[in-house]
Structure formats: structure tokens, C-alpha cells
Length: 499
Figure 1: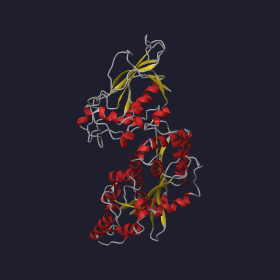
Figure 2: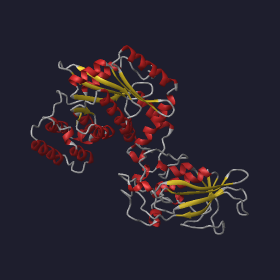
Figure 3: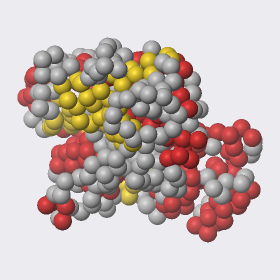
Figure 4: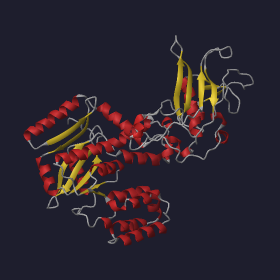
């Protein structure tokens, strides 16, 4: 429960006078959440987060008075509002900030010398302050976006006992409402770190999805659809990845590193041409493992011009993806060039893996690599193998179309046939572009962002552009996925790292 008193309006008061204020009333957290604001007690802080750093998609500069007209009166802070705890005051300001369109940070605090209790605390706009000048700024390739602009919007709470407040409850003693920057639209406030938090129920849902072999990206898409959009989910994909990373670290035992290393060394004794590479973090926990035996290296020497790379299988206990480098021999039989057990699916991890693979194969890079549509994977390939033709699996393209264009597929029964025709049936680039533009026009998809992005990278997936590139009769990652059925016989979600 929150106790507060106050009068309507925006105030910037430094005193503690209570003259002219309305009688005290009580407001439940449930009342706040019912007004379209989220209430949480934890400030989420992630590395590489997707916080609203720029003013992209921000509202035009509107006065705080206009913004307050759109917010329920009971969500607007007022001087002399009372709260039982510091967290209660923070949650209230957080709910107000989400409705107004800005993020929140905990700022300065003052503790009592004897009790250690916080007597004064400031909750400020996330753009308060400014970044310190860094001499490295003149030599970096790209600058980090500015996140601070000396915004002075904040509230100050205090629990110091006075004649008017003998109980020492927390109360607002100062409220500065005006910002010196644009506030974002309500559909973007979920991107601020202070407004992001995974609930226990959501964590459980992610755990279940991962244990069933569903990738984090597909898990996020499913959960987003269930709540009607990303703005209603309460967290972003980076938060999900960070949660999985912390969970996997917690489930690993320090002894796992020594056990795996002992096994790999044993394999190397039995096969002198067996090669492995591992990454270990600061806590002696294994992050990534790559290995290849003599036959894998020999097969790659003869048949490694075209490689399928896939990370969809993740049935081990820690939920780690198993990555396979797969190809075909002269009899069109599926062969494996190398395998890896990865910690996560970030660009940094893929860069390490691709570099390790080439080093193992004495510097030979494939002419063509087939993968699914993954941004981190594409970034790593462009950096590590810039001369290798990166071809996207057309089967995954079609599956992604069914997800992003589900409404079109349901409304028009012939859309699937026309979309498939654009992918497979055209021999000439001009014919493909004409068919694509006709499809866009016929179904009114001129403003579809996903189709626009796909057209920009059409040379990676449209078969008309790959006819002069040697692909060993492979246009999908089916070879890699067929190996998953073999893995299921030996690896399941109950399998630990040492097993």
C-alpha cells in the first residue's frame, strides 16, 4: 500500500510545508498496474542492452503539461506524497515514467550515520548527467551513442522526521517534471532498461522452450505473439540471452572443465590427428569447444568447397547449441567436417568458431557456406570469411515468411504458391524482380518491412543469383538437419556436459 497526500499540478518545492493539502488517501499497486503502467522493484542492467539511446521514434517536443493530460492523475507525482518504503517510491516514479515516456535511474542517496538507513534519495531521468570526456574518443572507429544530456527531471524523497512528519515515512520533497529532450512514444518505453524485467513465470516459460529444443529467437517470437506485441512483453531478446547465459553458468560445475579436457586429451592420444580447441572463462568454466578428427580433416580437404553450418540442435542439459560443419562427398553422402559445443550464439562466439575452424583446416576457407537467417552469424561470416559466398537456406526463408506474413498466408490461399515461385522458378534476374514487384503490388505489401529487408539481401537466397556459384546441389541446410536425427540417439536434454 502507498500512503500519499498532495494537490494536483506540477511542483518544484524544496520545503516540507503541508498547508493546503488534501487529506491522506491510500493507493494500491494493483491500481497503478491497472492504469497501463508496470510496477517492478528491480532495475535491469545488461551488457550491450538495447536501451533507448537515441531520440529515434521519439515524440515531437511536447511540453510536460501536454504529456500529463494523457496520464491518469493518480500516476503523476506530487510533493508530500507519502510512501512506506523507498522501493514503494521508486515503483511509483517508475510507473509514472513509463506512462510519460522516459527511463529512470537511482541517483544520489544519503544514509543516516547511526542507523545506516537511507534518509534521502533522488530518482532521476535516465538521461541525467553527461558522459566524461575520453581521450580515446578521437581514435575509435565508431562512437557509442550519447545517453546523457543533462536532463534535470527527477524526484527527491526523504524520511527525515519533522514536526509535520513525526513517523519518518518517505515522502516526495521535490518534483521536477520538465525534460530537456523528447519523451518516447508509449510503444517504445519497454526498451528502457528500467522498464524491462523478466518475471519468474516468463523465466519458466523460457526454460521449458529451451529444454524442448526451441531456439531463443523462436522462443522470443512465440512469447511476443502471446502477449500481442513486444511492448507488452516486458523484456527484450538481450534480456533473454543474458538470463540463459547466467543459468548455464550456474548449472556448470567447475570440475566439468577438467573432465572435458581430460577426455579430449585422451582422444588426441588415440588419434594424433585429432584436433580440439576450447575457450575457458575467468571462473574456469568452459564456454566453447571445437573438435575435428582425422577423417573430418581429410574429407574437408577433398570436399570442403561447400559447407552447411547449422546450430539448431540444443538438446543437452545446459541448453547449449551443438554446431555442425557438414558437406557432401562425391557420392552425395553427408559427411561432417567439424563439430562444436557453443556457449551462446553471439557474433563474438561465431567469430571464434570460424577462425578456429580455418586454423584447424590449415587456412582453407570454403567457397560457399549455407546457413539459416541469423544476424550474429552473418556478421561473423562477413568479418572472418569475407570472400566466401554466404547463401541462406531457402527453406528457412519460406518458414520465416510464414511467420512474418501469417496474415497474408491465411487470407490469400495462392500467396504461398506465388512466393515459392519467386524463390525457385525464375532463371533471369529481370524476371525475378518483375515477379517480386508484381507479388508486392497484388497483395498490397508495399510497406512491409520484412519483405523490404529480404529484397535487400536477395542475392543471398534467391536461386536466380546463385546459379553460377558451386553449391554441390545444396540450397538448404537439410544435410545439417539430417544429422540432428543421428544426434538424438546419443544426446538429449538430460545429458550433462561430461556425458
